[in-house]
Image (cartoon, rainbow, N blue to C red; front, side, top):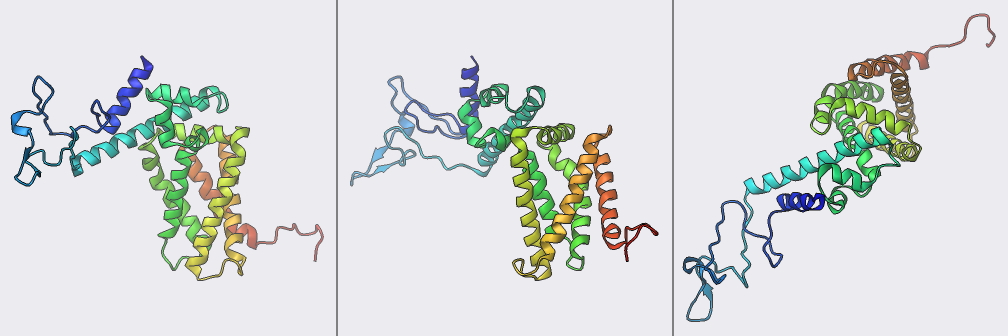
Length: 285
């Protein structure tokens, strides 16, 4: 029965198909047939004197009808795909948290959404990709926030303000896919899953490189000759990781708590690097 539900879900997503495998007409189209399976008179193709087919079904060949999709049907189809993707992400994360990433199979994720394994792989190349789906949104959201900062802001100021501005709108963006508390719990799951830690580190390094290039472009610098963009981004990323680690070890796992910790750590970075940390009388020049 589960497989039947999967077939129905795919049919609803992709549009019904005729017996010979071709797509049927979209919404609003009616095909009437005679008792012998032939087109009704009003739809039966007619031939002109030169052997050309004319009439309402002039484009039909061997029972196939060409129907141009409308903006309405295209939008509905894309919305269904988006909802299916969101459902798969939510099911995957809930299963990863409940029983562990490594113990969860693709079949279990697909079954939870009543779709086939083939449908899962239509949206994600692997379990890992599904695990980081929301994190990808977070990363792109932050990159866009940095990209749109006013040009008069300095590099660190742009990173600092972009991080806090992104937090103000990120909850709504994530909420369109999964509940925000599920995202928070999935973050902790990723941080504590050996099979995902390497991928998490790789993604973090990739994000740092993108940020460094973005900062270099903002400042008109050659990234390969000037070390400052990568240095600034490395320091910024270290602070973000420290804030996230402290949040994960605490008792308040709310989004506001993480935002507050992020602000505290970022505000502490600049003076911490500029000040002399040595206590008087402990030595040094």
